[in-house]
Image 1 (cartoon, rainbow, N blue to C red):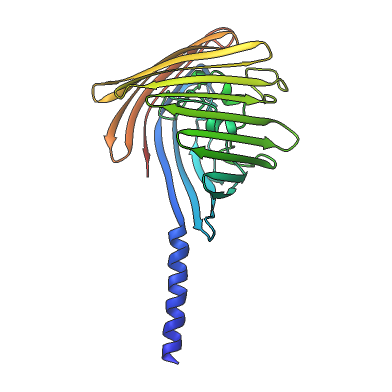
Image 2: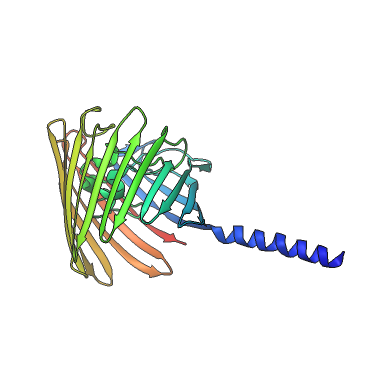
Length: 308
């Protein structure tokens, strides 16, 4: 009887251990001060912001060369947003989930995820930009307006309805096709040739933001990585309007200096950023962006972020 109990206990323990090994938790913490020249609720131009993000990742190796995975996110935050949305205190909330199956470089994913243009249709940054501020993009003017026009995952809250994506990797080339049922289909292709990366993306319709919803969209981008420095450019066109940005980064004073200039919906925009690594995955960052025209707004932030 004792042998049976010991064997049963060992089996349960080994199963629990296997399940624990399949689940990993990663995330980010950050805190800082944000500025908006247009003003913030309460009559001030400044606010403090902080956030804790926990990503829950599951990975399972099955037979016949198949692997399965799943993901969801929990976020607790006060203030902030991208683009800058100065909101009130928030309670913690979970995102929608995604689940995928993969074999020989071919992956099928259902659920809450970025679309094909984010996955493979831009050569650098997040949609070619969002590299100013400790937030990972204050205004994202360097993304040529793509951040509000293409399929992106809601970081918290409800997921997009019935989104599916197929991705395939072969050598240094990545191909992606995504579709929202009853809405847009996107295609993205990215390839690297040594220090040079080029990408192209197409969407059957835009969402909101810089272009009229319903019009098709295309984007082209390229980036050169020189090691201690790099340069990139991205252009996107829809509904007769072309948005663009040119950016560059260089190692400076033990950190990294980044700058861009561009045009979004007819308005000029530019930004500057400096990030200094503190070790242990922590970075101290200060950045500012300006957009002219009707918006005529300057946003800036200084803060610390760390990953784990």
